[in-house]
Image (cartoon, rainbow over all chains, first blue to last red):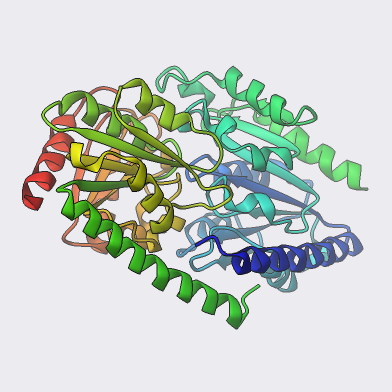
Amino acid sequence: MHKVEDIKVEEDLLAANRELALLNRELLDANKVVAIEVSGAIGSGKTTLIELAAQNLKEYRIAAVAGDVVASLDARRFDKLGIPTIALNTGKECHLDAHLVSHALEKLPLDELDIIFIENVGNLICPADFDLGAHSRVVVVSVTEGDDIVAKHPAIFRRANLVVINKVDIAAYVEADPHKMEEDARKINPSLEVIQVSARKGYNIDRWLNFIARTVQNKR
Amino acid sequence: MHKVEDIKVEEDLLAANRELALLNRELLDANKVVAIEVSGAIGSGKTTLIELAAQNLKEYRIAAVAGDVVASLDARRFDKLGIPTIALNTGKECHLDAHLVSHALEKLPLDELDIIFIENVGNLICPADFDLGAHSRVVVVSVTEGDDIVAKHPAIFRRANLVVINKVDIAAYVEADPHKMEEDARKINPSLEVIQVSARKGYNIDRWLNFIARTVQNKR
């Protein structure tokens, strides 16, 4: 299973992906669109956080790209909000790649958009290595995943700009310490911004919205 | 990213894995050891369920193999219980494979064991295709992952023997319907056994222990 050829294929694949990611970013820049990648485990709250952004940031023209292995359940949730939505089915792949995202960008009306949220496939392992061409990378974790979740997956936090620790309202029920999660994230990446929220209760959602607005303003 | 060569590599890899899985199973059978694979997303409760089995089924000699991408945090939890434990670090791979598991089997005292739990890497996508040589495959999901989690990941449920729906005590807090999850699982695989538990509260844990005992008895 761990043959030299496999490693070679992976290196070629990652190099090709990096080039395509650069092209995606150039295309976005040319159209003055900011892309924000949102990764995180299954059920961490990625879709809900993007929904909240679309509902509350009406001053921006927002679209969503939703990666899923099989169904298009998340894409349907975005569709209901009336924002342009592209569903990307990855088949058996556990992450989006720059090539798949380029097809989504072809289908979106880039000159009529300000922000594209790219929701990655739900896990903390595979998306770490694949640059999609987004300007900012957000990782969502929830206290229900256990407060050792960050320490267990350092790679994805190393390349992130923001960590959202979700469901802090039920931290006591699941006996998790969100402050430990925050400390673990800062140990891995000291420049990481960390916010604790409850997407369901609306707690600290203003900080999430503020991060998005700042990201857009920094790009202009 | 989706070149013919990549697909060829994957087919070769899966065929090689199947052969190694058969060898693992033969080795286990020769030693009268039953292996139970436990897959599930991050934080679903895989480690806790295996801990509960080790604590409550003292009539069996139990060992654990724990797959993790980086740290060995789960393996340390098993170690504390005083059972033989092998940590398998997969590096960047999002699943165990039969080759890695064969190395773990080499290190375990097979003739002194009745059950080996093999805890896979935490996600519902990658482990689906890789037979490890276990006799029974358990998938753990929790209500905090959202009650569309089963419908979103059919592949892993198709090849499972048991689905454990965990954290049903907090289903109302996270607005999830465990009965929908159960129905979705049965739609995908009608012969699937499904149990709803709360590992933290001990609810229905007797059914989980009973499944393990039955699996061992059926193999004898």
